Length: 93
Image 1 (cartoon, rainbow, N blue to C red):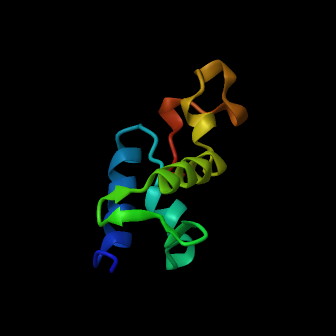
Image 2: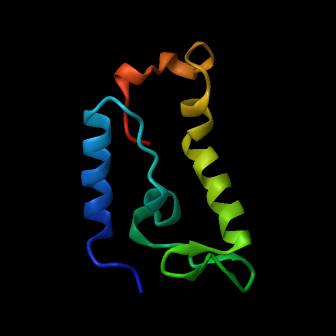
Protein backbone atom coordinates (compact mmCIF):
# COMPACT_ATOMS: atom_id res chain seq x y z
CA UNK A 1 0.00 0.00 0.00
CA UNK A 2 1.31 3.45 -0.94
CA UNK A 3 1.51 6.14 1.68
CA UNK A 4 -1.41 8.55 1.35
CA UNK A 5 -0.39 12.02 0.19
CA UNK A 6 3.07 11.04 -1.05
CA UNK A 7 2.67 12.81 -4.41
CA UNK A 8 1.75 16.07 -2.69
CA UNK A 9 4.64 15.77 -0.21
CA UNK A 10 7.05 15.05 -3.06
CA UNK A 11 5.83 18.14 -4.94
CA UNK A 12 6.14 20.36 -1.85
CA UNK A 13 9.61 19.03 -1.07
CA UNK A 14 10.71 19.72 -4.67
CA UNK A 15 9.42 23.30 -4.40
CA UNK A 16 11.25 23.82 -1.10
CA UNK A 17 14.55 22.38 -2.30
CA UNK A 18 14.51 24.17 -5.67
CA UNK A 19 13.44 27.38 -3.93
CA UNK A 20 16.67 27.19 -1.93
CA UNK A 21 18.70 26.85 -5.14
CA UNK A 22 19.44 23.15 -4.94
CA UNK A 23 18.54 20.28 -7.24
CA UNK A 24 15.78 17.85 -6.38
CA UNK A 25 15.61 14.40 -7.93
CA UNK A 26 12.29 12.72 -7.26
CA UNK A 27 12.53 9.02 -6.56
CA UNK A 28 8.72 9.08 -6.38
CA UNK A 29 8.44 10.33 -9.98
CA UNK A 30 10.97 7.73 -11.11
CA UNK A 31 9.19 4.84 -9.39
CA UNK A 32 5.60 6.04 -9.84
CA UNK A 33 5.37 7.62 -13.30
CA UNK A 34 1.87 9.01 -13.85
CA UNK A 35 0.91 7.84 -10.35
CA UNK A 36 1.16 4.12 -11.20
CA UNK A 37 3.99 2.72 -9.07
CA UNK A 38 6.36 0.00 -10.22
CA UNK A 39 6.00 -2.97 -7.89
CA UNK A 40 8.52 -5.45 -9.29
CA UNK A 41 12.15 -4.85 -10.16
CA UNK A 42 12.61 -7.96 -12.26
CA UNK A 43 10.26 -10.87 -12.88
CA UNK A 44 8.74 -11.75 -9.53
CA UNK A 45 11.37 -9.87 -7.48
CA UNK A 46 9.69 -7.01 -5.62
CA UNK A 47 11.04 -3.46 -5.82
CA UNK A 48 10.82 -3.08 -2.02
CA UNK A 49 10.98 -5.55 0.85
CA UNK A 50 9.07 -3.19 3.17
CA UNK A 51 7.60 0.33 3.06
CA UNK A 52 10.96 2.09 3.25
CA UNK A 53 13.61 -0.26 1.90
CA UNK A 54 14.45 -1.43 -1.60
CA UNK A 55 15.56 -4.93 -2.51
CA UNK A 56 18.98 -5.26 -4.15
CA UNK A 57 17.32 -5.56 -7.55
CA UNK A 58 15.04 -2.64 -6.69
CA UNK A 59 18.03 -0.46 -5.79
CA UNK A 60 19.67 -1.19 -9.13
CA UNK A 61 16.45 -0.46 -11.00
CA UNK A 62 15.87 2.84 -9.18
CA UNK A 63 19.47 3.88 -9.92
CA UNK A 64 18.90 3.23 -13.64
CA UNK A 65 15.64 5.20 -13.53
CA UNK A 66 17.34 8.16 -11.83
CA UNK A 67 20.09 8.17 -14.43
CA UNK A 68 17.34 8.27 -17.03
CA UNK A 69 15.87 11.35 -15.30
CA UNK A 70 19.19 13.15 -15.58
CA UNK A 71 20.87 12.65 -12.22
CA UNK A 72 24.19 12.06 -13.98
CA UNK A 73 23.97 15.61 -15.34
CA UNK A 74 23.11 17.06 -11.92
CA UNK A 75 26.06 15.32 -10.25
CA UNK A 76 28.59 16.33 -12.91
CA UNK A 77 30.97 19.21 -12.23
CA UNK A 78 29.41 22.50 -13.45
CA UNK A 79 31.72 22.79 -16.46
CA UNK A 80 30.62 19.35 -17.69
CA UNK A 81 26.86 19.78 -17.28
CA UNK A 82 24.72 19.63 -20.39
CA UNK A 83 22.53 22.62 -21.10
CA UNK A 84 24.47 25.01 -18.87
CA UNK A 85 22.84 23.88 -15.61
CA UNK A 86 24.17 25.53 -12.50
CA UNK A 87 23.24 25.41 -8.84
CA UNK A 88 21.76 28.91 -9.20
CA UNK A 89 19.25 27.80 -11.81
CA UNK A 90 18.03 24.60 -10.27
CA UNK A 91 14.91 22.79 -11.41
CA UNK A 92 13.24 19.64 -10.12
CA UNK A 93 13.89 16.52 -12.14
